[in-house]
Amino acid sequence: MTRQFLALLAAGLFSATACAQVTVSEPWIRATVPAQKSSGAFMQVQSATPARLVEVRTPVAGRAELHEMAMDGQTMRMRQVKEIELPAGKVVNLASGGYHVMLLDLKRQLKEGESVELTLVVQDAAQKRQEVKLAVPVKPLTHSAHAGH
Image (cartoon, rainbow, N blue to C red; front, side, top):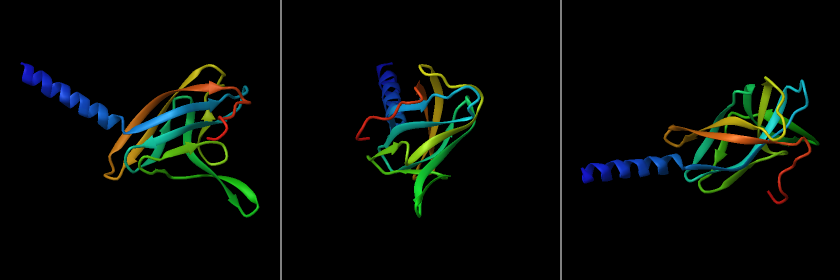
């Protein structure tokens, strides 16, 4: 009985470690005004092993896309990207002016103080996918990330 319990405990610890491979810190979504159909989601993502952020889902939007802001000559342009690389051990900042998540075709207004479900799908080098489920706070329209991020 003790041997079975230890085996079960060890399996549980291994599973917890495997699921903890990707961490997310300081997630937030910008609030919207009534009838606004898009918003941005921002956060820092870190993977213990090389991986890629390949998909984002949320019930509050018709679509959630990975985007990048980049200079095109003298003009800053936003474009959708297929994936975002997550180098092992390196924090990848999803923020205004760089990589970020766009929530499009919003189904309702996102109000300051509420929390929104967001699921990140991360794929490792072996093509194994992991879902990271988040409850992301909605911040005021005027909110910006801390300086230095």
